[in-house]
Length: 212
Figure 1: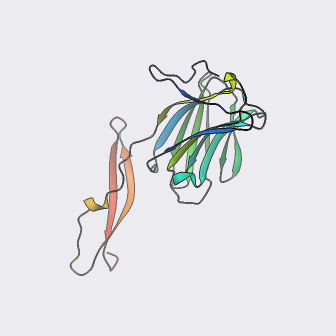
Figure 2: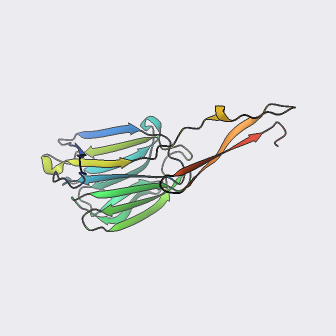
Figure 3: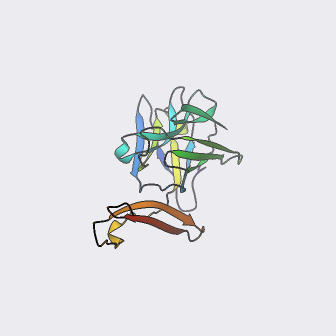
C-alpha cells in the first residue's frame, strides 16, 4: 500500500503494478534448493480487485511448471496456496501491512510454509505436497501482480528475499577407481548443521560394476 511496510534500512522494496486486465511479474532463476533448506521473502499487497491476485510462485527451471503458488485473491478472506491438492486456505487473513513468507523444502516433493503477519505477528503453518511433476527441482522464483487494480494503493511490494547460496554438485572432485571395472559416482545427500556459519556436509556414493 506504499507506506513502507516491507522496507528495511537502506533497502527499499520494489513494486509491481497492474490494472486494466494486465499482469506484471518478476522472475529470478535460483540455485536448486536442497531438501531441508529454507528461503524467505516479505511481500506487501495493497487493495486487490475481486478475482485479481498478488503473490509469488516457486517454479521449475525456466518457469516450465509451478510447484507452489502463494497468493491473496481479491474478494477472498485469507491467503491461499496452490499445491498438488489444489487451492488450500492458509488461515491467515488479509492484511495490507506486509507478510513474511518462509518456505522449507522438507522432502523432494514436500514442503512447509509459514506465513507471518507483520502487523499482528500472527503465524500460520501449512504443509503439503508440491504440485507439478514429482522430483523436479525448484529453480525459479516468480513474483506477480495479476491485475490488482488502478492507483498506488493497489501496488504490490517485495523485499528481503533470502535464498541459501548452495554450491553446485562437483563430481570432478571425487577421485575413485576400481581394478576390474569403471565406477559410477552419485550424489546421496546434503546435510546441514550449525546455524551461523552453516556447515554443509555433502555425501557421494561410488559403485563398481558388481554393485559394491
